[in-house]
Every structure is written in C-alpha cells, then in structure tokens.
Amino acid sequence: MLSYPHIDPIAIQLGPIAIRWYALAYITGLTLGWLYIKRLVRFPPHAMREIDVDDFLVWATLGVVLGGRLGYVLFYKPAYYFSHPLEIFQLWQGGMAFHGGALGVIIAIILFAKRRGLNLFAIGDVVCCAVPIGLFFGRIANFINGELYGRVAPDAMLAMVFPGGGPEPRHPSQLYQATLEGLALFIVLALLWRVRSFRERRGALAGTFLIGYGVARIIGEFFRQPDAHLGFLIGGATMGQLLSLPLIAAGAGVIAWAFKRGHRP
View (spheres, one colour):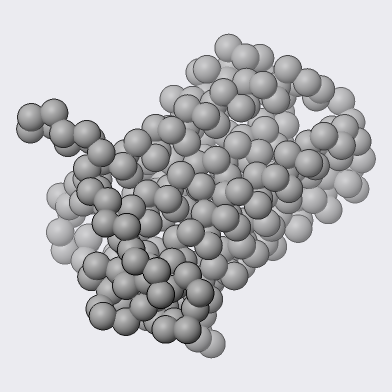
C-alpha cells in the first residue's frame, strides 16, 4: 500500500485570497490547449486563423465553466440544487461534470463557427485534439484534493488510503483516469493528426475523441467509487458510464459521416 501524499488544496495563499490547485488546473489546461490549437491550425486543413483561436478561447472557457457546472447540477444533484438555487453559483465549493462541459463547448463551437462563417467540424477536430490536456490536469487536481477516489482495493499495487475515504486502501482512480482520458487519448489523437488523409476528413478526429473519451471513462469508472448520493444505477453502471454511452454513439456517427462524405478541403 502506498501513502497518500497530503498536498494542501490551496496552492497559493495571498492574504484572504486563496488560489486552489483546481483553479490552476483549469487555467493550465485552457492555456496549453489554446497554444496547442494555435499550432495545429497552421497546417491543412487550416480550421481557422490564429486570431480566431485567440477569440475562441473566451467562448471555450464559458462553455467549459457554464456547461460543466450546469451539467453537474442537472445530472448529479438536481433535487439538491433546485432546493438551494443560490449554491449553483458557488463554484468554489466544487462540482463540475465533464459531460456538461463537453456539451457547453459543443454549443460554443456551433455558435462561434456560425458567427465566423467557419466549418464547425474542422474547428471541432482541433479543439478535441486539445481537450485531453485539460482532462489530464483536471484529474491530477482531483487527486490533490483527495476527491473522486477509487473503490476499495486492499490488494491493488497502487492502493492508498484517502482522507475522507475511510480506513481502507482504495484505487487512485484519478491517476488512472488522468492516464487514460488525458495522456493516452492525447497521444492517439496526436498520432492520427499526423495522418493528413485522416485529419482532412472533417469530423474524423472529433468522432475519435468522443469514442476514445467514452471508452476511457467507462473503463475508469470500474475503479472509481460511485457518487454516494447516486450509487450504482441500471445494471450496476455508474452515472459516468451511462452518460458516456451517447458520446460513443455520437462519435461513431460523426466518423461514419466524415468518411461517407469523403470531403477533403
């Protein structure tokens, strides 16, 4: 059994102002994602100009924050937040859902593409290539906070006792998910991006991301402790697994559409 590294969730304390690792994870993910997209758009099919990427950063940030928060409220604790509506705005208390954030970014892409007269699938491809960066840092922040820990696993090689998780050793599922949803998915998309015939089929990379994330999330959920107020749902599945199924289906549909059209700019 490994020892859990107790790290203060507050990274920087400036008098009454506290900057948490969770906030830094979002800032780092968005910043590195922005820089990475600026690099990708320099190559065919040139989804947008670099100045468009700068402007889209604001749209993406709003999509992530608003979508992630509303997704958590609606998917995970609707009854509680409808009874305590003012707490919906207390982001510092935690509570963000990737599936909601993904929906928020998709809406942002649609609106931005329409406003700028750009191809939304081309934008979706480069954005999806960068999303795993944010996922990686977000999961690391979950680990630092000691939240979203794994299921009891006394014999697991990496098992550790999490504060708030009881005395039993558990899977560090946050690290598993950081590896699958972040690092592994980033590498797969980066390799596919290098295949010009693939990346020029608009939507193929976005579809690959949706399938890849959905599969990675479903696998990761087998090691993660379900939310206490939800537990196991249909067929012993978790909410995260159920919400990932539509992503996989949508990703398969987008890839089929991309190859059927056979469109290359």
